[in-house]
Image 1 (cartoon, one colour):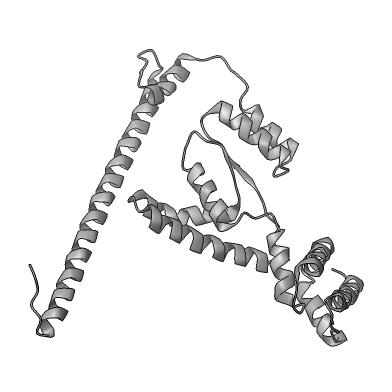
Image 2: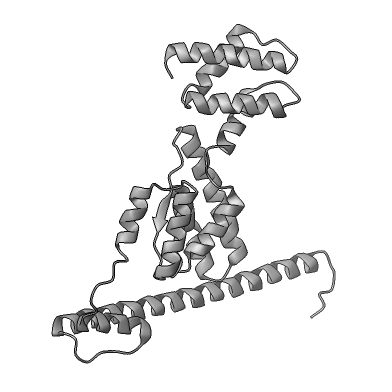
Length: 260
């Protein structure tokens, strides 16, 4: 905001306070206006209007900020978690914010070992922290398309995102352009065989070598994940054993008998 806009905002804050039944000093209004100057003027104006309608107490910077954040377009933590779970389906096309994507990176290792509750807690903690940082820097919400393999779902998701004004029509056209049907080559059939299991024997030597490399990567990845799951299961068994032993020792220290 310009200095003139900040001055006008201070006047609007004073006027809003009066509609709530009390008088706010000019100095206090100026301080609040300075705190809110990093946000667009129309956003702050909408937040002040919401305060005039909803508030029953005194006007504070926190009350105004709360309404600015609620209107910034970022989904709540529960909705964000639902989006993150949808994004884990590689066939689904979903719309993500950078905060959701980064929070997924924090929760994915926990989710991979089967702890869905722990993953949800890790995600929400990271997501709220990331949103707080983004809002403190007055970053507007930004939606990104995470493309899935299912082309029908891709079209539906992208068209829905345009209707919801999450992405522009130009951005949607770029993503939809990838769906143009091209002739299926022998090499293309061989690559599709990775998904269908129907391996073509007529692919070029270069493609065969690449497919062998991809299969090797897939197998190694599965082995690493299985090994990690076993390690995590072993770690949990050890933790449970140690907790039980500690509890048993504490009971015995009190002179009580432990029932086997």
